[in-house]
Image 1: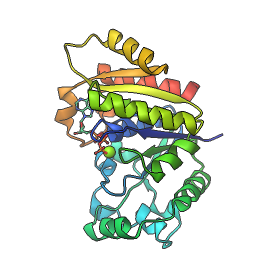
Image 2: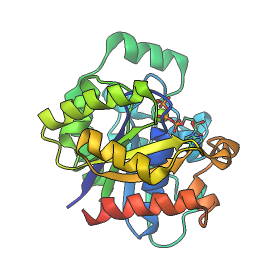
Image 3: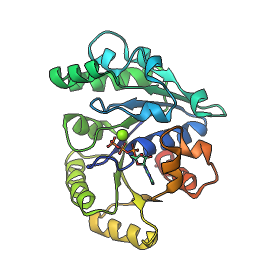
Length: 252
Ligand SMILES: Nc1ncnc2c1ncn2[C@@H]1O[C@H](COP(=O)(O)OP(=O)(O)OP(=O)(O)O)[C@@H](O)[C@H]1O
Ligand SMILES: [Mg+2]
């Protein structure tokens, strides 16, 4: 059965798009057909990590939400762009980065049910094994939908008081929506922190499993969203940690 994985955080800039790109690529590299949808319609960005340029994105999630196309028509095979080798395939449905399109979708809104229908159609049309959903930060009706339909919710937080409080709120919501599986992940842990102690503290605070802890990494900053880190630096400890989290997604 296809698995839906949504990647979320209460605050912005925590690493959702990076996690989505790296985890989706890692799962695809295991030989799976993987789709990624950029549901961050107000501020799309994950297409950069998949080396897809705006001029190549003639059709987008927006076109689908406006009833112009079938969602699979906005799916781009980015396997070669990221340098995926093996039997896996990776698709991205990007959101439009055109100012007019963003303004229109923010002004008029869209039917959230259509997004849900789109996920189903995409899984079917592309025969996906996994669908990853990159989200806009915070809580919204889109977040509720993606949490409710997910088999796995990856919730990212940084070791920061703003993130701690917001994550507590999101976990409450996820529990009320009866989320099937929640994997907390910690990102941007600075070098003076003891990662094992941090993991334990977060697990005790929220009574949830921490699936991975990622350091604040100059190497990620240096890549600057121009590619998928775990393909560029497969032996890097960060890539190993992505594989560790991906394993939990696949096995659970
Ligand atoms: N562990 C890390 N160490 C250093 N920089 C990181 C790390 N993880 C992500 N970044 C960087 O932080 C920035 C934000 O990451 P990313 O875009 O993945 O976050 P996001 O949660 O998707 O943001 P938004 O809420 O705006 O969608 C990017 O420049 C990214 O390269
Ligand atoms: Mg993002």
